[in-house]
Length: 172
Image (cartoon, rainbow, N blue to C red):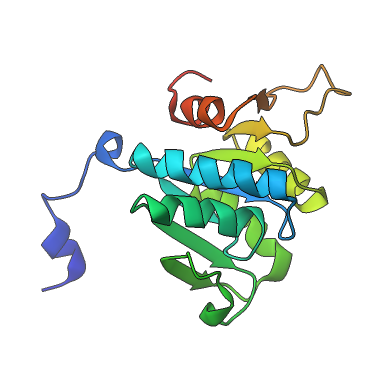
């Protein structure tokens, strides 16, 4: 029996699927950004969401560690061809071999992005997300305040709880 036939009639409506939240930031994050990411990961898992990230260290590892501590699902889209490069808290490593180009896949794989700290890689992920209609919540990351005319805009959060609430909200 083919997989499509096995799934026929048993597919979940999109509203019943877990929300996929991309958590993006530096691979060598500060202690404060790592603490924010850890709490974001825990809160995403508590709400039944899936943490999607680049699968390496820093913000990505902290978010995955927080999510796994609460039994959550973590997916890492790796820049390498080697699944062993994933941080130890990635439950589903996906080696892409695409280097930084995998940033696009992270954004496309998620419905919402939470940016924590970060540098130019995080900014590029935010730009791709915004350009493709994904909600972007920032937590100590790029605000793009020098472009008040930019639409859509990232949504600024002050705490991990506020960031996760905004990510799960149905209101942009």
